[in-house]
Image: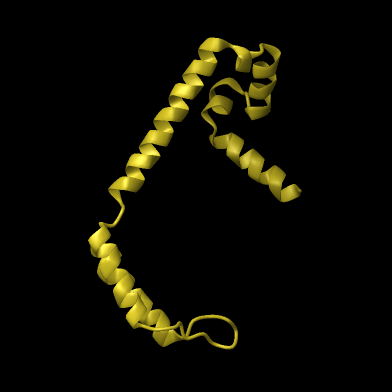
Length: 112
């Protein structure tokens, strides 16, 4: 609880709205509720527009970083050649198997 309060105070110190106007997110919420801004048609349209833009950017970003199908198939084939994972008694991968997987990832993902 105290940690959350300290964290919130630290966030406020860096918040432009707090620095410029002395307002925090609670004040903003009270204002939005008092003026029924979430029911305002213009604001609702703008929020949908912004949300749609954000979603489209995220989709494009994901598509830009997707591995080509051919590369995915090669990587999967090599991964299958490694066989079943070697797992230690504590449930973690053995060092050798982890090293093999890391090398495979490096080969196809990091270097692309």
